[in-house]
Image (tube, rainbow over all chains, first blue to last red; front, side, top):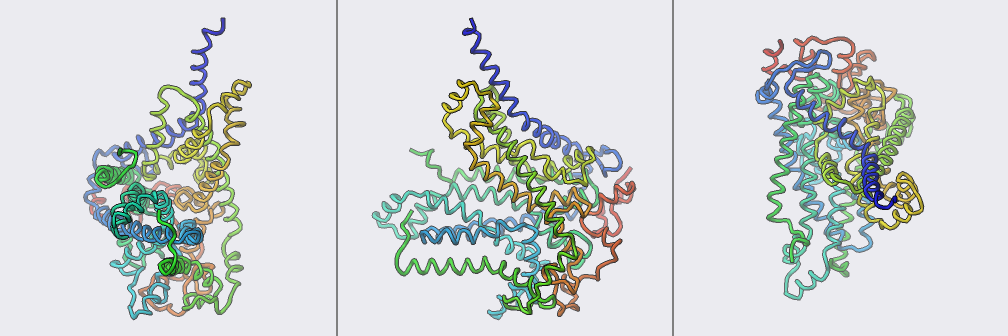
Length: 308
Length: 311
């Protein structure tokens, strides 16, 4: 008697329990993602300073965004940083990973060394490089001095602030190295052997075998590093922002990243509406860049499973 | 791919790696060494901690409540790591084991949340905690983790999917309930993955500056990164402090071009207002007029558009 009724009950019971298991995430999604997204979109059309209730101002915030020179400036700074940081990170990481891939068992030790900076808190990295990049006695300029180069004012000269920040960011490229190394170790040896038999030199093997085989990993790091670079905050905020004395000593505009400006607008000046509009522009920029990269990737990323 | 090379090339590769490794390690060595030097010699070239001055550490402990901040970081980090591990595993089990309509769509949604920049949800999330009167407590630093986190849900689901389904069915036949299935079968089997999540999240929480910057005002609640930022902002340059305080050397006190040379530390009551984003404390102390959108003493002059705005 129970047999015919049992099946649907079981399926329904399973579904009910399934929802119960997903419940925490569903609640979190509604409260911390869906709700805030709607709220932030609404806030971006209002004038809101926390103390007084939001006042609808239509497109004013977006108009202000176009008029405010700091928005363009911070966006330019951020893009400048991203354009330097991402390719350099990828190139140097690939170089290190290729070396690691050739030294056998020793690679474990070096990999740990390259990964150590990744484990260092961003605040500490910021403070450390504020000292290392010091114009007079910083280690970087000391090193350049050995070669007779009079190092630039990394932390005070607006033209050199960004290269200094990029230099700092390169110290923490360990995670990219680890990803590339894993990808390199997955390249089948037979492919290299076959290419060698066909008379390919080492450069040709690199160009035509290694690169296509790790293009998936290259693409992944391109996307992830770009998204992260566009949201750069902690290290730079630590170095150049915070209170008046950290800030006023030099032209802070040169180091104002987009998210830093957003943060200042939101929590320093309490322009919550304006900051929400800034956040949506950031979201849009990231979305567009990611979609473009995805599109372009079809031309150069090779997935083994798609062929044959 | 290729076999580890033998012979001269291998030596070249290893040498290149050694050079790279030295470059990566030197900042650490320099930091440790400078923290042990006499305050005036923080920048003296060379990597030896001379003149040796380990008292920097004692002085750092005296100058700021380091043990308290360490304790706070440990508490917040543990709460964040444990809550995200338990909740993410629970949710991941839901995605991995149960079959019901709409599941894959929801899982797509989980992955989609990973794409959303923190900045978009930052302000409304702050308003939620503020509404709950939980700003200025450590709760917002970890409580969001009770609802699982997309990346960890994804990771743990992959692990759970690799377990043979027969295992769970056998347990069901033996009369195990679904929670027992999760707690007594799945949970022990993915322990290595759970450990990874614990470590990742603890590290993320341990190093995070953004949330403490937004939510914490009271110094006794600070986590270490937040405290470190205050130390930099406040002592940045006190002459007596060594690198344990991250301070400057004495020699270049008069270089006007150098940011290390900061004004003398303000008296405490002024200084207190000085650190961190100041707007919120101001808002709390009383309504700030809409007209005064750009607080006086703000680092930037009001942009052209602000003059005409307002009702």
